[in-house]
Image (cartoon, rainbow, N blue to C red; front, side, top):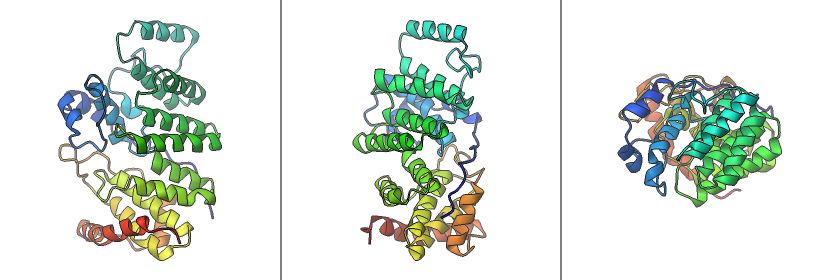
Length: 311
């Protein structure tokens, strides 16, 4: 099995940062609106912050920790420094100590900026600090961020453990959730960890969404399902989800009523796409109507295949 190279950088939709602040209200967050995250159990006082945090998930569903999509304010904010010099660290800690609320979110946003600047060790330290000091602050996202830093640092075994921790938190709690399950599938496949393929497939089943709002989520969910099924020897079973994933790459609109251009597949992983085309025999939708027909045809089959006990 030829492992895929490291995932490419994902495009961000910086304009959505302004939309999140100007048009997405606390009431939208409280009800869930058309956001692909669950807000049950999120304290009302934190929901305004969750709206901003949710923006990063929508803009970059494949990697909520890329950082750029979280830049919804000015770049010179004290909690968004790409590099923390000795003086900057003193200033950050001083301002953090004076903050009346939202301290863990300031830490999270600073960690995002550090990660974007590839300062993974510093970002990791800050995320671990959140996990230890504020364990109830977006724990699934924090542990997913820890996993991404560890993955970038080449500490694959620790990254796997952190992804699993994030996933298990997602399973226990119905608060805001991330994409650790698809990231876990990507990592174990790229590492060639065949011993974890069934586990990864099971996690995809646990969070299965037959109709993802955003095409990029649709591509990731169905794509990794197809690739893992194929790796496990279920080649014929892998074709329907592979075709569904390829169909998602052709979509020009998402199902988000107010933001139809968000979450489109703009920078497809070519290696992943080639593998999916190999599974389908290079058959893929040639038009929007063809894609829509294909989606309807394979949806039930894909869900049934995932929920079937391993042979």
